[in-house]
Image (tube, rainbow, N blue to C red; front, side, top):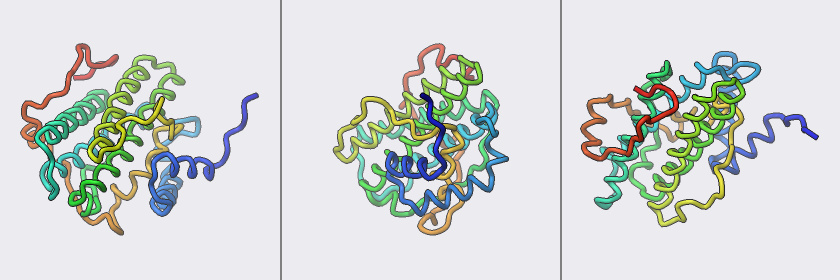
Length: 243
């Protein structure tokens, strides 16, 4: 028998358990989500445009985060690790290009980070694994919602993106010697893509420990950083028009 959904309290506990992000940031984020719910989500679920806009925002954010790793870090990476970081950056930029090609628009290109994130290898890896876990879950939520809306092509594309983000979780965990993949299947943290907003709120708003401002560097800078470290793009790269 199908059970009725529980209120936000249950979801808050689940998100905290699945991502390991502290309660203060989560609660602050939920307050933001409640105050902006009419702008970002529909009563019956996210619209396609909302999901595409959020995807563009998240991919812009992660591309900025990885650019910070390559340009601002004070800890060492091996040559193989730096190459992997460049491949990840190329993948995230490809995801951003895909979202934009299908009408997605990032809500901001300015983000905020804890400065310690790029001076502590373990902190960087742990935080990145949590962020990529959230990205994986957001694309899984998009898969569910696009399927619910009857758009099988965008649902399949979202599943492709979730697979890619899950690989990024494994790379981040491997940086500190953790088992790269410890899950039989990805955790469905979010029901709708817009549920991911609370976890992103500190990075979008700043304040507290999030004092290091960074602007999305733009495609020219990212292309230079990537160099020849290109990810494999299967043709066609997605079930929808990618470029």
